[in-house]
Image (cartoon, rainbow, N blue to C red; front, side, top):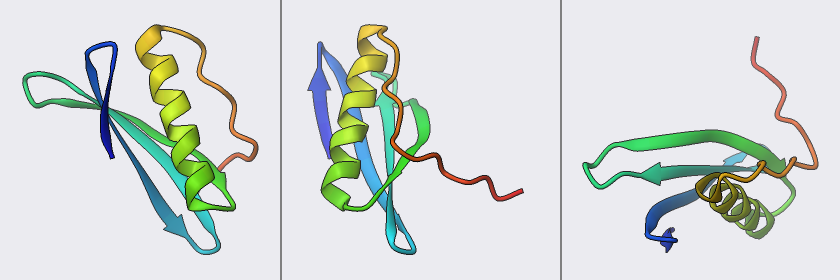
Length: 77
């Protein structure tokens, strides 16, 4: 989903990993470049993951602290 917040284009997405859904977001620049905020957190539903991605992206655009996810994504190392 792409939306605009305060003139900034934001693309949110959700990836499924087993039984969880991973929230992701990217800030899209006018020149076509994108700044990925990476994997933001794991959630039990796609809708919750998408809502969290929106909250994180809007906080990033406004310069606020990013909200904490209810669960951390385990590292693959």
